[in-house]
Length: 296
Image 1: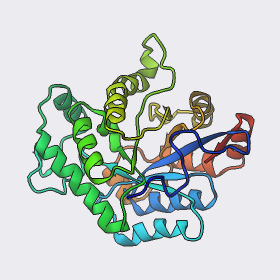
Image 2 (image 1 turned 45 degrees about the vertical axis):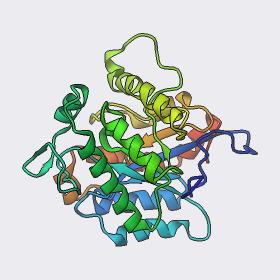
Image 3 (image 1 turned 30 degrees about the horizontal axis):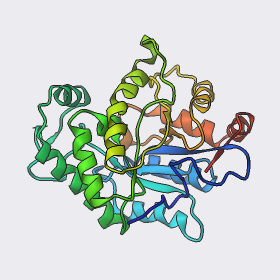
Image 4 (image 1 turned 180 degrees about the horizontal axis):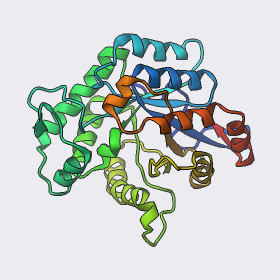
């Protein structure tokens, strides 16, 4: 078991900070969803523009070669923490044979999954079995437990699902830290334009408390949620994210290139290329410096 992420990220926020800057984790979600996304994420890791990524082991195009191409980037020096991106929504399919409910052999869509979770209509045993199967696939592919665990569409903080995630993490990956998706200081009033972040604040409160009770680590704060629209100004949004995270905080992102596999599996396509262009560009390190932030 690993006590700390291999990428060097200390979720306690207590690592020595010789630069005087806030040390944060910038995590690219969805590694494995398509070859083009994988190429973009690895490129940003090599450029030192990312220091974490989470892997979708259920993606049909994910193979050991893609895992090796990522893992080899840590040879000689730790560049990137690698986590499990737990996936429980369509169009992806379960790894465990008895998982229910399914639709045409695939997980339910996100709205149906969220509704069933809030209504407590998901089976705990089936959830534990599927989460454990995805964790085993990660270990089989990478030869070790993940540095951290998070969730596609943030499913890991949903009611019922979070209890199953914590059960599996405590038993099979106690050294992994867990992504909580709440802001450091959530606003007191609900804002419709901020509804995704507000929901994540609410869902993450109990998740943090339960993880703490089990002795499992979480990141102190989270940012990166926004509405994936074509007119989204990602550089401006990212500047706001930097203001939301303290030392040891986590920002989520979704950089990538578009290929046919991505278009088949996900609605977030060209927005990934806009995120990649910003993170790869000259303005990104300048923005970090102006905000007193460095990647841990």
